Length: 405
Image (cartoon, one colour):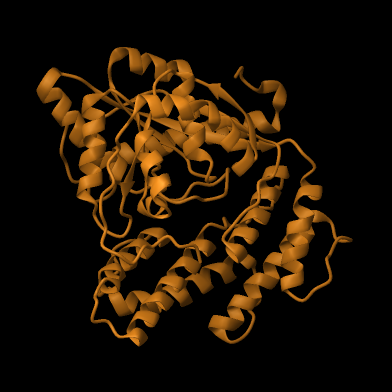
């Protein structure tokens, strides 16, 4: 389980942008993308739309999909291409890894958000960035890395909340506007996917006590390993391996793991989405972790609950029937899923090309309303991002129709 929850009191880490440090690190960004994430090239489509918003002086929120850990750095390169650094909201735990990393992240415009609470300081900071309109603000509506380019998780409402408040403030001060640019990042793999993934699959198979299944076609090999990994977790939680369609077994296992933890911490389930339910429970658990008087047995039980929630999150990030129409990218993504779920790390796979598709500006209404049945601003944002996703998928399947980058 990745160390995403830091069991100590939260301290907001603000951005402290430093042009000198930013300028020094800027040339190193392509090297970081290549060495750490396998991204060797980036192309842009629609960046003129972002430039127009910059020229108009709008407060700009960039809302990208979040399929890979490389996404923030790819979006930073988009800012560089438009000659405007970006501010990025990022989860708190990355600031707690070491002091040097914390210092450098702040100086390039990144600030923290605490996912286990309502982080009013982070929301206010994001709002201030939009009102000032000096740098575009980057917020990932999904909030977690999906590792799937053709599927997006449910959106959290923070983007709408921040942008609406900023729009009200801008209108009151200078009649300025706030806009959201939906962005879709698609990664394409230019190498031999079987050669790259075979060593990872061999390690997975060895963990299962198998001989490496190199004689099995790649798609069947991936599915076979996935079924075995699922069966092992079913035995852990249910006592025996399940049967029937894989998607139904995953849905059942998610509920078997999640519901007991929910019942322990929440009196009434208010969210239909799995990730919203997971977050709601984690927000209840985190304050208990900070209690000094907590007995070790109780603390161990809390961490078991957190581990169960993390496992539900892992299951949730496997879309149903994702390999029904496989391509190199989907095959690679699922293998990376396996490696990350088993080891908390993913080796870079060269070469990846990132296509950054910038959508039309979505004006944010200067209003403060409560939408009990879903915010229309977030619905519109999602529809536009899904449109970008579908268009980029079509262009990938039919290269001759691909727009100019």
